[in-house]
Amino acid sequence: MAHDYESLRSLVRGGIILPGDANYDDTRKVFNAMIDKRPACFAMCTDVGDVINTVNYARENNLRLSVRGGGHNAGGLGLADDALCLDLSGIKYTRVDTAAKTIRVGGGNTWGEVDHAGHACGLAVPTGIISTTGVGGLATGGGLGHLSRAFGLTIDNFLEVDMVLADGSFVTASANQHPDLFWAVRGGGGNFGIVTSFLFQAHDVHTIMGGPTFWELERSEEMLKWYRDFIVSAPRELNGFFAFLTVPPAPPFPEFIQGKEVCAVVWCYTGDHDKFDEIFAEVRATKPWMDGVHDLPFPALNSVFDQFFPTGDNWYWRADFVNEISDDAVAEHVKHANKMPTGQSTMHLYPINGKCHDVGHSDTPWAYRDANWAQVMVGVDNDPANNEKITKWSKDYFNGMHQYSAGGAYVNFMMDEGQERVRATYGDNYDRLSEIKAKYDPDNFFRINQNIHPKSS
Image 1 (cartoon, one colour):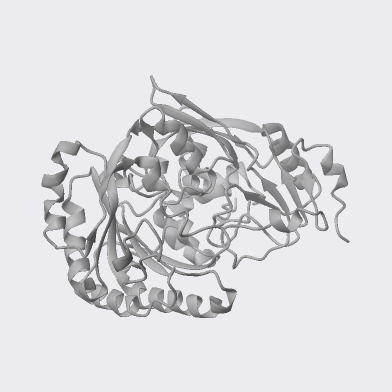
Image 2 (cartoon, rainbow, N blue to C red; image 1 turned 45 degrees about the horizontal axis):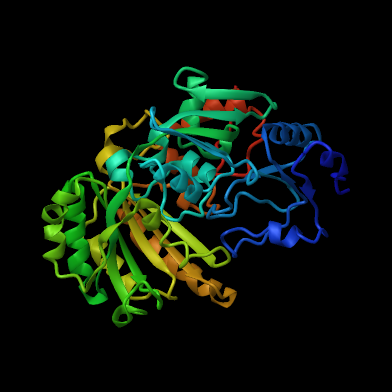
């Protein structure tokens, strides 16, 4: 018999949303339109009290609980059919401390909101590349993007978190308080509790040099071989991720290149602008088809993809960590790049060297500190009739490339791929995560995620 959620209504100041309510279908939409799940109830939390009450209610009534922040999770793991969804989107605030260079944000914030608050004070936190992404999911999974080579992963910039645990208790975790929990949440995802507040170390970032360079797709083999050597030895202030893509048929791209399939690098330079031309000379020596790099506010770069990848497109993801890109791997890349199934489908190679390599293998759950790239191939289209086509391309690309990978993948790029894939992603750190899971969530209450099973006693 279905559970009657009416008794939850008085416990959640933000209210609840049930099937049949006028806003139910809009509420259950997430970034990836391929996800079509129907939760039994949404608890729209606006403060910590709402979160504690919802967690206690779910536990006491033996209900499955999912947790949704920004709704960008690749596999749609913020939702589950017939489950209670704890929605954090109402817990939003930003507080910048310019003296300490820190930014405190709520568990429901998006990265665009963090970028906006920090930029006004000349600061930024390392994050991803789409500003509509929720802070919580990206941050607890690792967090990589334009600032990774200069300042590390998002998890490398945690100072503390406030969390609601499976038993409903509220704790602060940091290097000095619950240090085991603090270690686990820096990469272990939502397995250990619900983060309602993050305190991040920020960095002096304001106007950067950024934008894309495009080369003809026919030069893919040449340019990927050049890129693999260049980026690992480039100054840390210069970040650039490699991509195969179709140039969107719209501004700000010039008409001569709109709709063309290209190989590209999207750059972000945070160093001394007077030194940029010298550092970038080798890039320009490759004679790009288009050089779109210029000075711009960091939030402008970090949101440029928002318009081209809006909520409501259909996505299918596959990913791996990569240590080296051999000539054979380059050939395999080029083969699949020439078969991109739709104009939005793409492959990205994100560099995770530079500052990321300064952190030890076991200092955080991120087990691939010696990898140089996080690779992701995504089939994307706004027409669900093309779902089979984009899924097949992503799977074929992944299957062709996996033999050249390091084994696991960036957890935020994974679909729901099973327990062995989760173990491969955490590698030697999985057992420690499992022990901490057993301490803080022995019944695996938080299990609708890339799940880490509690270690049996």
